[in-house]
Amino acid sequence: MPELDLNQRAKVFNALSDPTRLQIVEQLADGQERTSKDIADSLGITLALFCHHSNTLTQAGLLIKRKQGQSGYNRLDLDVLHQCLGSLDQPTSP
Amino acid sequence: MPELDLNQRAKVFNALSDPTRLQIVEQLADGQERTSKDIADSLGITLALFCHHSNTLTQAGLLIKRKQGQSGYNRLDLDVLHQCLGSLDQPTSP
DNA sequence: AAAATAGTTAAATGACTACTTGACTATTAT
DNA sequence: ATAATAGTCAAGTAGTCATTTAACTATTTT
Image (cartoon, protein in one colour):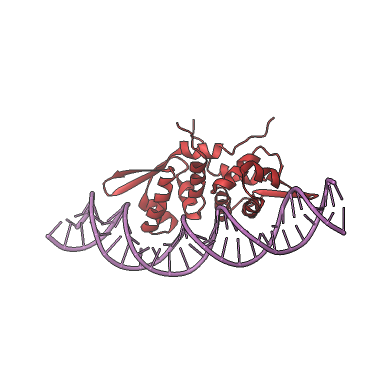
């Protein structure tokens, strides 16, 4: 897996910097995939707003979309997510 | 330690969403403290710009400032940082 | 006391963005 | 075929923000 540079990492954190997007990511953090409709409904937002935010998440490399029929299934790229989180995880030396 | 709510967590990630601030945080992620001047110099930015960003980091609860003489020593609140990172760390069940 | 150093503050500018609304496409159900 | 459902796109608005510049305070040095 190629390492993310500074700007890419900042872009990922920027994707997490909005409460609505953070809820989306937290909801997908278990690695499962969900439809756009399900996510929008569970958060009480319009599908248009979810689409808007999902573009930001996708551009940051966090969201992966799979289309089946009229539904879109969304899941996280956990590698990208954990690589960014890990860059700040400096455990205290024992 | 009180748990951070959704908006507070988003605020922390927002503090990490700028490349300049992300560099500041990464530089302090080892838990050590550094003077504002040292950080500004090492990043090649003006002290004014560091001050601007340090306010954002402080308001997010990430940065703790200690003043001694004419120098200010900065360090991270690692509890806040790790609590936010941990909220997205859903390890795959074995 | 004067000069240098460390840090803060405020204003101005230009760019970016969250959300709403309405129209649009594609798929599924009746 | 018609209607309903899932999703996308684009424009408009209002608000936020990163950076620069310059003036300012407080501390240390000479």
